[in-house]
Amino acid sequence: MRKPKDPWGRWVCPNCGATVGSHAAGGEPLGTAAGPALRTLRNQAHGVFDRAWREGRKSRGECYRWLA
Image (cartoon, rainbow, N blue to C red):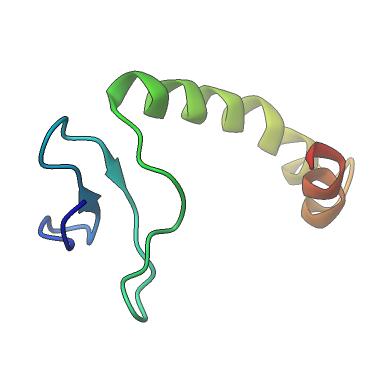
C-alpha cells in the first residue's frame, strides 16, 4: 500500500487498485483494503445490518457486539 494520494485520503494498492479509508489523524488505515466487488458486498451488508440500530431496535453498540 502507498500513502493516501486520492482526494478522499484513501490508501491505494499500486498493484490492484484496492482502497481503504484512513484516519484523519495519523493516516493509519481504517480497516482492510477492498476492490470494487468486495466494497459493493460490504455496502450491501451494511445496508441490511445498519437498519437494526438506525430504526432503534438495538443500540449501535449492541448490534456490533452481537456481530462480533
